[in-house]
Length: 108
Image: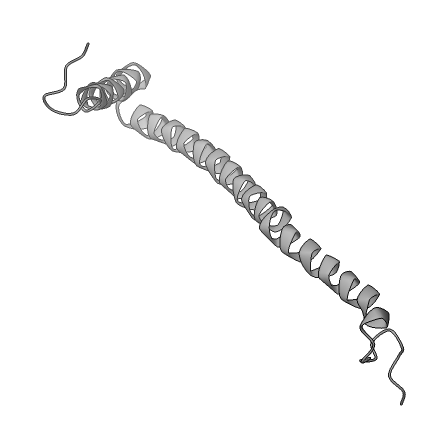
């Protein structure tokens, strides 16, 4: 089996020059692609996964709140269900509002 002329090793540097330049350009293009496009594709993939996970989390929270309201409504009635769930949200909001600034920080 004969070695193709494009890949044959030659002692003549003039005949080997186009092959070396082509290999150099191919390696350079591969490195640039690995440093740019491949990284960008990874970021795009994880951004898409994050968006889908966030949306699924929001839907899950909404379903849990609806389920909680329906459960409490069956136990104590609709008027008291809204009162109890609203009170829980007010207490949770007050706790989060209190934790919004570190201790000793001014509100200016």
